[in-house]
Length: 340
Length: 254
Image 1 (cartoon, rainbow over the protein chains, first blue to last red):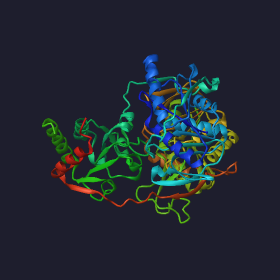
Image 2: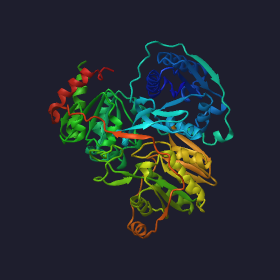
Image 3: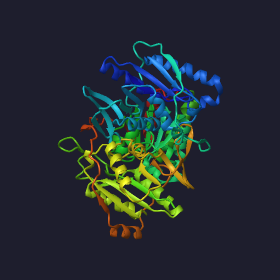
Image 4: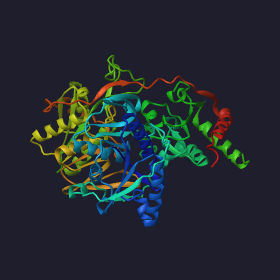
């Protein structure tokens, strides 16, 4: 059986969890004879829905049932209980261990990676992180991202269980040919006191975290060194607001302290997959590509026609972003006011 | 007083084209420099800060070739007081091996480390598991994705980004933490630090375990995509063409 850890938000399963389910189905097809089952841990909606009470939980549950049925999942296991109210990797690993499986999968998110590392460590098994494809099944050889996505490693994954995380945006979440009618199994795993030691004691929501806005945005305006200074963001912020977009930044920009780290796109920042990525004044280092290569369309605005961001983009305007971006914002405003 | 161990890794510094070795088993790093993973730099910064706050000490440790001394000395220049090099070919060590080798070294060491820090994942192999495996091997609580930390008596209060905001953890010492970039700003080495690093004698050890390996069969490069960029023009004159493209992509209809 292939067990997929499904992370949830107020919209049901997170997009990367749906991608992982699609990957799991492909793996099941290649292996032959394996079923795909889902495990959800803790309050549905990762705390958001639980704050809304039982009704909100029920809404998320309905949504999840529909999404997981569409993904052809055979069974849904839901580990709940007082000791799982707050996230803790050790407790989640115990919950995963309560559902025996030959293959354990999660999205390559911070939590997915952390929990599966616990599962692998406990089992004395290997773990393949950020898998993007299946090379072979006998023996199992997977392709995974290394060097921030700039290189693929073919890795032989042995052990029991076989533990792997699926890189974000490596596969498109596709519905199964035949939807399933998965049954919910609620259970309360037995967590030890040691499992609770590393649980979250509280969540501080004071500082808005734009990370989820960035990773889920349809349009992202990216800012690089070409912005020039911390005071040079007005043009980009106006364009962001006009487009209803999210603002992202290259590592240089966050390292220089021009923008906060949670806006960073790239190997050590967020991985985005918008419809359109407008990369402004970004040269396009390998580490930045690791975070933006899943964009459906990339438009570069840059003074250097030879910058990798330009040569690998779909469209480009050669020029100073401080001239091009205000002109673009103005043109979009005119178009909007004329009802275009 | 809190004594800290920071485990760091020498990684190729990739800025341009990546080349593979002839056997396709490793990165051809002959013509590139080497550096520390960004997360490792933050782990050093966090450790040096915590040691300064509590009057403790920082030792840095790396498993790697003799050249990894360069990264250890850099960490000493940043404020670490001592360095250990477990001399081994890192290519033959998988993440479980690295964790086992460090755990064995920690157990054999007379020093008692209250807090062991690692980077959240290595910039080259991106395995996301050494910290967790190390915590498991030593029977210590382990946190990952940590941005900042404070010592409160016999426990550490740590913060990291979570899906709903900042997750706060409080775990008893001794503990292991995997540090993620974003909470602390790594300092630059001082002249005094550089001099100290130059003079420092690195403790060289042999690994106490036999590696199993990483499971690597080979490396491949993504197919190089020929440039298909359509240059829309220069400067603001090109804006109308871009507006048309954005309009036809559907993203302007909100």
